[in-house]
Image (tube, rainbow, N blue to C red):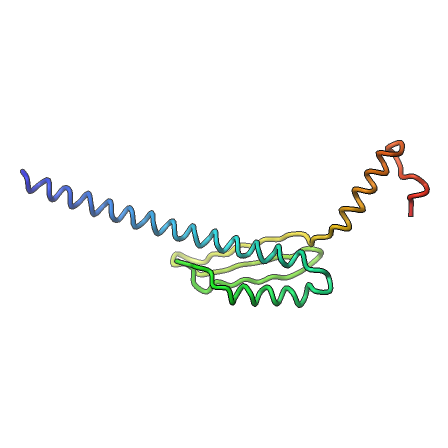
Length: 141
């Protein structure tokens, strides 16, 4: 009877160890996906805040920095990041190989233009000051 407890405990412990290994492996995969998404998001934010005359050269530099920077990855291999600008937006794509397949994500964000926002808020303020239907004649272009 005592021997059966030892065998049962060995089976239960082996199942427990396998389950813990699976949970840790899943956690590493989730970590890599999160780090990959955040690295891409950081690069897109850097690119969208560049001035128009800095943007082309700046995007290439941001991509080079992403390749140089060592991101701790447990399950990703061949992590690549690509940025491009088109139609007033900065688009970023990140790819990597995982043991169970391919991983990729895309993020797109509008180019940061604070002057456009300021013009719109000024127009709204002028509408509020007037009758609410039109801009004042003196302020119209």
